[in-house]
Length: 270
Figure 1: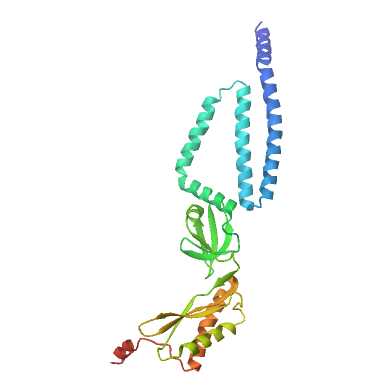
Figure 2: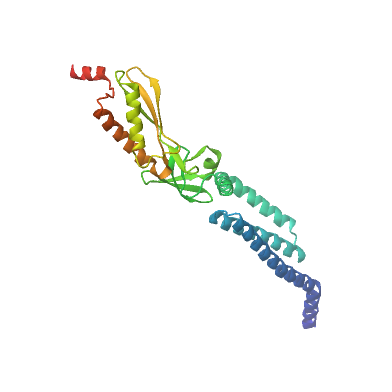
C-alpha cells in the first residue's frame, strides 16, 4: 500500500512538473544557442570598430554573463520558481557592489570612453594629469605610460578621461620653443642670421614648417630671441639639446655675449 502511494506520488510529480522541466530544458538549449549568435554578432561589430583588444574581451564577457543571468531567470520562472525576489536580490547586490566600488566604476567608465573615442593610442606621446610619457598600455581601469626617464606611470582612467590630454604624436611634428638672450650691444640682424643658420644646418630640423627666429622681448639686461624650429616628434629632445649647444658655440664664435647677472658676480668677489 505504501509502495503504491509512492508510485502515485511520483506519477503526480512527473505529470505536474515534467512538462515544466522539459520546457525549461528546451528554453535553456534554445536560449544558449541565441546567446552564442548574439555574442558572435557582437564580436563582429567590435572587430569592425577597431576597438582595443582589452575592451572587446571585457564587453564580450560582460554581455555573456548578463545574457546568461537573464536566461537563468527565465528558466526558473518557467519551472514555477518566484523570480521577482530573485531579481530584487541581484539588483540589491549590484547596488551594494556599485557603491563599494564607486571609484573603480568611474575608472572603468573612463577606460571605456578612452577606448571608444581614442584620444590617444599605444605609442603616442601624451601629457596628462601632470605627467608626460609614451602610452605603453591601455587597460580597463588604468593607462600605463613610459616616462622620458624610463619610469612607469600609471594613471586612473577616470581622472584621465575627465582631464586635459595633450597628444604630441597626432600631428606627427612638434615645435621646439627656445629662448636665448644676447647683449644689447649685439647686432640684431647678425644675431638672427646666426641663430637661423644653426637651425637650418641641423639635419633633423624640418624645412616645412619653416623655422623662425624673432625678437621676443627687450628684457632688463638682454634682448631675448624666440627660436622656433620644427621637427618630428621622435626627434624633439635631440633637436632641443643640439640646438641649445650649437647656439652657444655659434654666438661665442661671433663674439656675441650671452648676459649673466654681473651684480651677483661682483658681490661674490667682494
